[in-house]
Length: 168
Image (cartoon, one colour):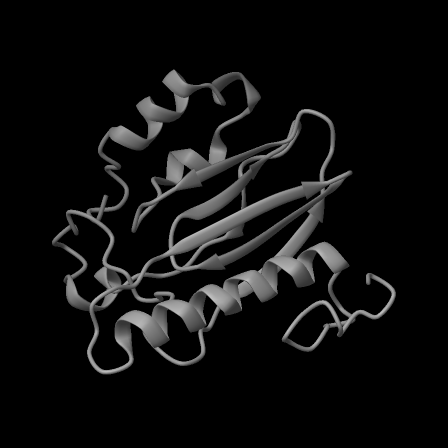
């Protein structure tokens, strides 16, 4: 069945994506259809933010709708944003009033179609992916190195007030 790429999916096969990335894309589209048709067709009752990750050999694939943000932690590099989505906190909170928590801007299942992103990278040995649900990342986060990529180091960095940005 893999030979006939369009026969295994109700959605068009995108040649710019690997077969596995196309499978994840189709799965998210089916989930959106199901949530919309069963829960939200006449009035909104259910929606969700979503990140789906898969690894096939060295390829790491993800599909994302809204939060959480994804960051690549790779030896020799600062944390690299892979997938970040702005939330509504940026629109509804003044710059000098920090938001208590992120407010979703992109949700799966609210509309007949969904605006999501599909990406992939070639993973290297010892790469890590960090998922965070935050409106703002402290500037110090982007200067972390592999010695602080442990749970204690990340929690310390993310939980302390960022004096450079009043919107922690």
